[in-house]
Length: 261
Length: 204
Image 1 (cartoon, rainbow over the protein chains, first blue to last red):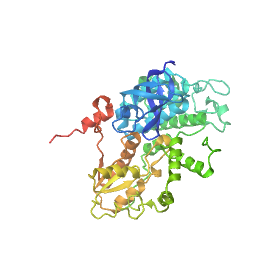
Image 2: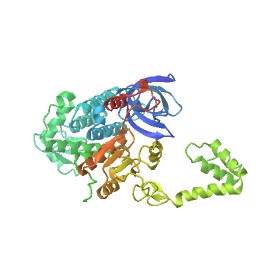
Image 3: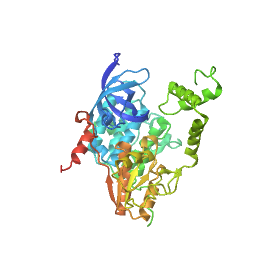
């Protein structure tokens, strides 16, 4: 981190709250300083210079002034607004989820360029996608792997034997897959099909373009989704808030049906 | 706690503390207000006290539009000259004030009392969306104007409501999103500018 009074960085806005009458308290994930909290003065007034440049999920180039507690954003210029994400209710729900993931998994003021690039690329992919599911799964796996929660997928996480090509078990508490012998008595473990195991192994060592070429059946997509979700919940010890909204939309059953007229 | 707590009389420091809790009122302003009231006539301070108490006592939500009101239905909903076929959906009661100030809208309102915010865990069920649907089912409404704020939560809420209403065959419109009056192109963001371009209009 630089020590001068003002500094420049590019960042993505991952959270924002009202602050005072017209100010916003933002949480940024920046390329150079990691997660930073900053004030955008007057951002809620119409005609504000900052306004749309500091909206949630905007990639912006910003100038910040160091404050005693919180930094203050003095200038902002949006680099990418991810317009297609904003125009779709489904993609935006994925965007909410991604930003909540990044926010909960990171600490303030710890620079992490690799994670920033992964996050930015994921948003760029999401803006081009019709369906966000696969992008989310790939991001989750990469995020966990990058932060040191990479699941063990080659050997049994308990006894260390190579996993056989059959239905195995997966235990978030043990940090990966378990063979049939070790998995059966583990109450927190669930079964994992050999195909799911193969997809996850493959995703861990390829880039997104290659990852997206994998054809997945509906069941396999569902299995991997459930698996990753359980794993993340175990690590965070809580359910992320935006999941419920994402599910409401994904299931297509809008909970507020029009009353019979 | 007020640093002058031990040197000022208890009623004074209590009022200073209460004023201090209000938005935009710092300690100095709170002290000035308190000492001003100390000088005022007993009637003046009683008027103020009564106004504060009455604020909470006589107010409730309008049974039609869910605006905060002291009569039911509220002034707008009971006004016979207003257009009952148009309903403007807003996030908060306070949003009605600027819309009314324009004098361009003569229809009725519907207050959601919030906005869908997945990151804060606020779901559609927490808002008064169901009341809107019930209302649309029973009244002869031909147009719903979505006037939520032009930010991600407001957009998400509008898109969600649009999806619920469109099967009912009612026209759904959204407030135009573009450049603010007195603004500056130089500082406009891409979202605003592209919406402004999309929604450009013929000049007469």
